[in-house]
Image (tube, rainbow, N blue to C red; front, top):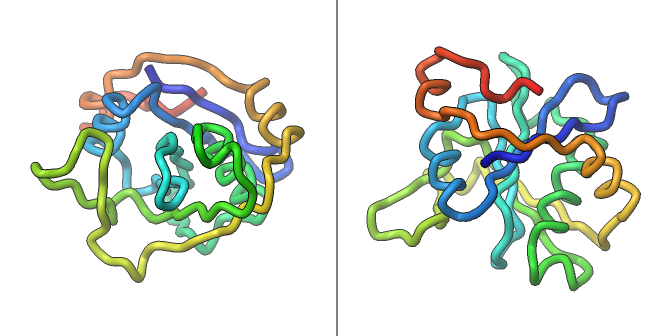
Length: 156
């Protein structure tokens, strides 16, 4: 199961998505797209939240508003991170995620730490989280098939 959200309308047509649990995250890690940006609360358990950029865009093209949407969503979906203020959220391109056989389910590292950025989330903004949750759609896509270009599983 994958949860899809629409970023703030004034920012453009961006889809934000996250897996149901750590097992779903494994598939999202394995079958991501080069346009995907991965978000996670730093040093705490949290959801893996992804932003699908448009082809040709980079992390430098993420607006402050869309960055806030992603950071708020990942904070809200962290049991520990949701309860505290001033949490760091790390984000990096999907292709920078490093998965080795010795890692636990849902655990990742990075190929290049210079491609990892951090944004601090001072506090949970309920108006942002509630707006995103109103756009939430649940689907069960075939991620493997989509990674071969046979379907567009991210479109909502």
